[in-house]
Image 1 (spheres, protein in one colour):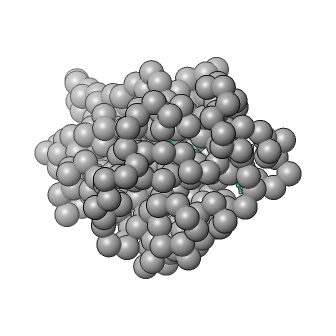
Image 2 (image 1 turned 180 degrees about the vertical axis):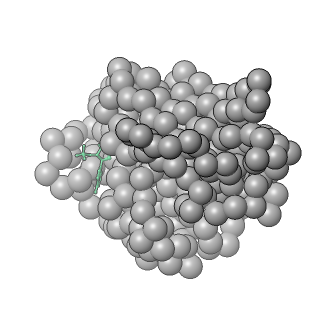
Length: 274
Ligand SMILES: NC(=O)C1=CN([C@@H]2O[C@H](COP(=O)(O)OP(=O)(O)OC[C@H]3O[C@@H](n4cnc5c(N)ncnc54)[C@H](OP(=O)(O)O)[C@@H]3O)[C@@H](O)[C@H]2O)C=CC1
Ligand SMILES: O=C(O)C1=N[C@H](C(=O)O)C[C@H](O)C1
């Protein structure tokens, strides 16, 4: 593997995560900001990425041509939108580079296209890039395996800032998948994502989701195991977006010498059980 700093592109450079990534790349060794990209027509195109991220000028101007940015880069860090991420995965495959995907809200059709791109790109995708959440997902899987579904109900609660556009959060779904794996069930057929009106009693074995939105909350998640007379709660609080950015950079460096394929943060962190 090369000793030179890994050349990274940040797409969605002016967004909440894009700015956080640019600040972190600037402050650590082993990675360098090769290019920064926003959508064509964005008011941030042509501006210095460091100025937008609050660093002052760093000499990297935000562009709107992702393929050109990817061709001489080694990896792309992507916290944008599902449509943009699908496009970027195809371009990352063309450029044969690492694509770290933090974008949430992808539908099955989007994931199929991302999976196809992973034949040529090294893709790491996760609904949450933090160490804490990924560790907690392993614990949620273990708890779900240990607790009888006839006696213990699983509910997943999340709260995020008022600007978030997808629900449930990628992290809530990650916890849901972990709990479903622990119970050896299919999440899609067992999840209850909305309750309203006369719902009837709770069906045993289902996994419920509840979503709160408001203010500037970065990310609060709880996985509740509710039994007769007791509740076990696994919870995670994000106090700063740098936990996600740090995970994304770690993922890019990890994937640098891997074969093309679709990987998760559990693979990156050595927490994968299968
Ligand atoms: N996995 C994880 O650990 C985390 C995941 N996320 C996820 O990351 C995503 C982004 O979150 P956040 O940073 O808060 O959102 P923001 O809306 O602040 O940032 C997204 C940025 O991407 C830009 N963008 C959208 N489409 C394109 C495109 N085609 N080309 C270039 N840039 C584009 C947006 O521009 P414009 O405004 O013009 O559309 C915007 O600047 C969400 O899906 C969120 O859930 C967030 C935090 C952690
Ligand atoms: O949109 C966000 O902000 C976040 N999105 C991710 C999610 O959907 O879980 C991760 C984190 O919670 C912040």
